[in-house]
Image 1 (cartoon, rainbow, N blue to C red):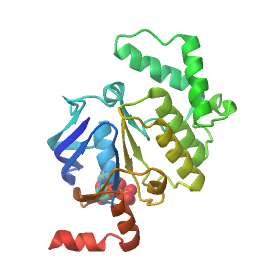
Image 2 (cartoon, helix red, strand yellow):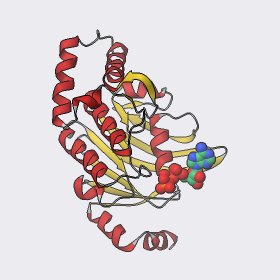
Image 3 (cartoon, helix red, strand yellow):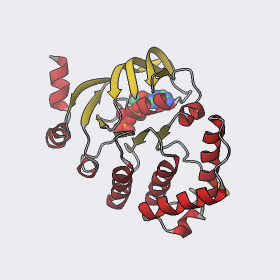
Length: 250
Ligand SMILES: Nc1ncnc2c1ncn2[C@@H]1O[C@H](COP(=O)(O)OP(=O)(O)OP(=O)(O)O)[C@@H](O)[C@H]1O
């Protein structure tokens, strides 16, 4: 589904990603962990197509297609979802109206007609019930005055409605409290299927107690230096990153 090969990326002529390889298949959950400044958020920005970063080498394939030259919205239309994609505050535009627009834009990009209003309402009802989202929340202005937990709820609701093939959740510096952790984890677990995949970028081993990854990757200085199963996350929690740094240096 997602294949990243020898990806190098720079910002302001400083190389941050130095040869990333990653292969994500349908039905899998991958976690990416690593110390501060190792390049985790840069990796998610580059996959999303953020133009602040320059890809200098390597490629990103999504659903068999090289997406390296595609604009962020075109990547989204193909079924890629990034958790920080829409963090903007839009006074006067409700959570519901925003999501309706996003869904219909994706449909138009595929040559489909807008989703009929009754179908949209049914979907909103189903997904908000599944995620235990209060209806009042859906009529609030997008992100305006949202607490951290509400922003998370909104993100997960967007993810549920857009039904992406691949969701990349960057939770590195979102200051998740225990409730927000649960919101993210429950959302992911309820929406998971054999046809979609999730990449969670996190510092929190705790999150991975709720979202059980199939693979854990350690990003260090712009490279994935170690991959393993879920037990690797426990090992990192216990021992930190120094032992991996030593292994890499040897
Ligand atoms: N827009 C930018 N301009 C300059 N340097 C940047 C920019 N974005 C990221 N960097 C640098 O790239 C390196 C990697 O940053 P990145 O945010 O990807 O790390 P991270 O692993 O997500 O860190 P954290 O765990 O602290 O969130 C850091 O040294 C950072 O200062």
